[in-house]
Structures are given as C-alpha cells and as structure tokens.
Image (spheres, rainbow, N blue to C red):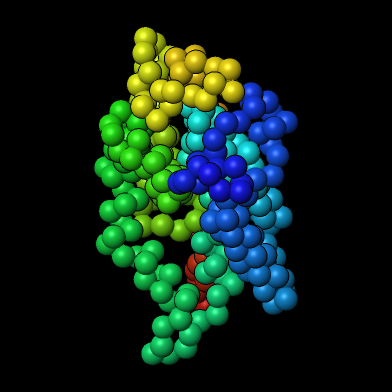
Length: 319
C-alpha cells in the first residue's frame, strides 16, 4: 500500500461505511481534474474572444457547459471515485452521470459551435485548428460514428458487453484501465446524444421525429440492464463480489442497489433531452414561420409592383 491509502494499482483499500458527506469529500483523480480544468479554460477563452470581438454568446450555454464539467468533477474528483472502486452501486452512479447526464449538459453548451466561431481562420492555402476541426466534422469517420446504426449498438454494448463479460474485471484491475473505461463512457454518451441534441453542427442531423425515435431506441435496453441486476440471485460482476468488510454491505445487496440506480436513472436523461428537443422544434417552427411571412410579404410587394406596372402600361397606351 502507498501513503495515500491505496493498493498496488491505486485502488482504495478499507473504507468506512459510505455516506453522502464522505462521498463528496475532495479526492481528485489527476487525469480528470486536469481534463476538467483544461475544458473550462478553453471554453472560457472562446467566450472571452467572442466578447472582445463584440460578438454575443448565450449565457445559458456557458452555464450548461460549466455544469457538465462540474458533473464530471463531482463523480471523478471526489471520494465517490474511491468508493466506486469497491462499491458497485457507487460505480453505477458514476457511470450514469458521466455517460448520460454530463454529455447532455456539455452538448447543450455547444462547444463545437463556440470553437468554430472563436478560432481564427488560418488563411488561404493553410490549415489551422479551425480548418482541422471542420475537416474532422465532415470526415467519413465522423459520419459513421454519429450514425444511429453505430451509436445505438455502441450505447447498448457499453452495458451488456462490458459488465457481463470479463472485460469489466480486466479494466477494473488497474488505474489506467479504470480511467479508460470512464473516458469510454463519456465518449459513448457524447456520440449518442450529439446527433439527437442538434445544437452543434454535425454530419448526421435527422428530423425531430427521428431524433426522438433514436433517443427512445436505446433507453429500454438500459432499463432491462438495471432490472437484470436487481433480479439476479448471485453477484454478476466479479470485481464487486467481495466488498471490504469495513463497508458493512453484501455483494448482492450492493448489486441490487446498482441495478435500481441504472433502472431509475435511464428516465432522467430521456426527460431532459425530450424537453430540449421540443423547445428546439418550437423555435425552429417559429423561425420557419417568420421566413414564410417575410417571403409572403416580398411576394405581395412584387405582385403590387407588377399590378402598378400593368396599370401604368394601360395608361401609356390610352395616351
């Protein structure tokens, strides 16, 4: 054991029984702490650059993005991360937040749109960060990984293909493996919700009805996963089959709690995204109605001009 009270792989050893107060104590993972700070700094730089230029950036987007980063820090830079290494239920809270809540909040912050507006063009014949970002957005690779034929199976496989195979135990066996797994959860959540949210530009942008269908296509599998954990009569994940005695829990009760969290949490992002989609749809219809009214006004003006010209020609002929 090292001086931080962790085992040979950086895993927490004996911990006192979990309480919310203990779970929220600061205990930063260096990788995620650095990532959160860099993310906030880059976003803040983009907003500041726009404002120096005299351009506006919605405050709501900044609030959403900041909340998304803080939600990642909440589960990865507190003792929730330590307890998540030995308690399946706490790990499931981390998983649900970082894969289903954090991506939604980050995407509502429109970071790609901000980057495209804040990054300066490189100039003719050259490629800078803005040009590289545009190239990635329009690449065939991005079209594949944001298509529902890829995002929905990947979203489902991240549950069943990970927890019900030896892969999960392998990743939990080391600190880099655990970090990689959490990064994977975040990435899968981002590519799943990105085409559905429709805030940032992307290669795959279906209509609003199709977005709702994509949203609800993956959620039942999430609920079934939680139900499977709750109904199991024996531990299904070896990494949590023998919790430390100091926690005062059994593996089966902890697993049942994890299943309940997975089942209940699947409803929260669905409601959030559905509200965002309805709001976006409403605003889109309003903008379309305004465009139609302007077009009708222009057509009416043209008809009036044509009628006046016709009257003028008649008057000229009579003379």
